[in-house]
Amino acid sequence: MLRRRNGRVVATLEVDGSFITEAHLTARVGACPDLAQRGSSRCVGAGKKKWANLSFWAAELRENNWGWRVINGTCGGSAFAIGKGGEKRCEELRVRMAMSQATFETADWSVSVRGMPTMATKGPEHRLDVSFSARRDFAARALPHGIFGQSFSSPLPRFGKVDVYPWSGSFQTSAMAEGALDGDAAMYEVGSRFETRFPFSRFDAAPLAVPAAALLGTGDLAASAIGMRP
Image (cartoon, rainbow, N blue to C red; front, side, top):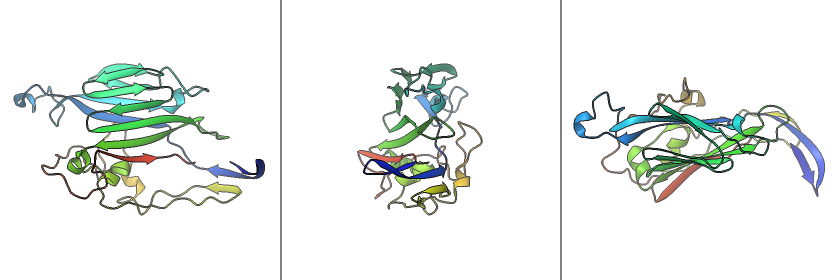
């Protein structure tokens, strides 16, 4: 990292940190045909009939920040891959890829993933910035959790530990949002790309009949984002 003053480099800071380089999404999609079949092997739970599993890979972005196979995954077991200008529908889930940014959306929520150059001297060439949006009262009924989700289910803003960078020299990042997360960061780790189980998971929980009141995630459009820093 170059520190500049009046356009001139006056100091150098070397940061030892990390970036998000992969984003993985799993969802149950497609309504089961009727109530009698919702408990059958034709359904995958929550009244849905198939799984959608998708991955966005920063490593698939080229030097000019786009690629042809940036997103790959399966829709009900059928494989696909898309890149620049591509689009895929899997039941109610719509996936669209522009140059380096993709959106994954349904009527209740939207996830945006954007690839960006890291400008790092070592390590990955591209990083991912991720943001989530919940529509209407979805968050107030689902009460989501997770590193992102709990901010939608909180009545007050959450402020966690952040690193304070020196002006120059070498610095190793250590902050893990302590104070903003329930538990600690290790409790949000999962064993595989599309795993949904962790101590605070709400993935299999039934939505509330009456929306919870006074939550930050309630409204026509509520959002949470991570802007990547090393």
